[in-house]
Amino acid sequence: MRNYEIATQEGIVSYWEYGDERNPTIVCLHGLAGNGFYSFGELAPLLQENFHLIILDSPGHGKTTAFLHENDYMFSSLATWVHEIVGKIVQVPFIILGHSWGADVALHFTRFYSEKVSGLILLDGGFTFPQNQPEMTFDYTYSGWNTYMEQSEFADEEDIFQEYRTYTKRWDTGKEQYAASLFSKRNDGKLGLTASKFTVLAIIKAFFKEPFADAYPFIKVPTLLIYAAHPEHLNEARAKGILQLKTHIEDITVTAIDSAHMLQWDEPEQTASIINQWVFEKRPVI
Image (cartoon, rainbow, N blue to C red; front, side, top):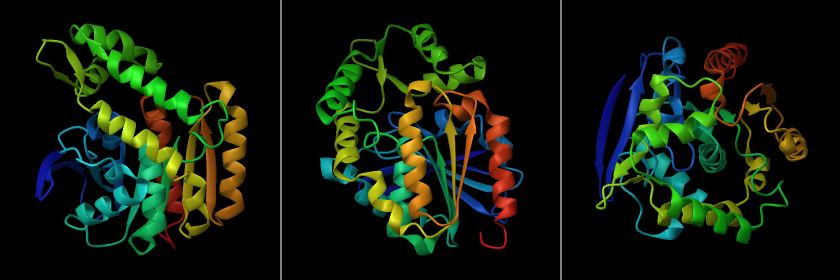
């Protein structure tokens, strides 16, 4: 595992690298308000034997400089950003993998830069929120995230751990490090999310302006969706999303994991096994 930084005109881009670059490359994109270390610290060591992993901190997250303009967080704009940054690191076509928001970014990247992608992996993202969840109107979602960002501050790390241990059924000291990495100390001494409210709310707008399903007809590469089976109240939304995927993407594999949204925390071994098997089966194509 190595952490690198790239200097650009916009600022610094941070990324993690695992594995041997002679192996197939997987570019990994994390979820909203997360970072690469938080999202993939459990999964990467289980994949690095067979793959070369590039794990980005997306703009405004982790150690990567935030964008100044709201429209830069549109999925089409983020796809261009990924293309420019990854092009400095990897020269050959790669598999792109995203969790949650990162899955949507990976999906749109594949739409616009299909020649760079040999396979697409969606981890519990890019198929339900918000278009297949009618209760998640723009006003409801925007207001909820605005409140969450205003209230997401903690007196100390132990308070952070108390909340984040509810996100997984397999909490341990390693995950304490991941959770703590999401926060920075503010001027008042409290710990707040490194991702700013401006960044997060700009991304929420992007979800509604550039729907995930709009990208589906353009996906012509082998695609794997691994989704969490919990909570059960999303089953209808999941069924709609899976049907849409299967309608538009010819080579699509769908599998569920008995976990919540952070499936790579709950079941890292199973997640890694599914990815390894899928790539092995698609080897003549990928």
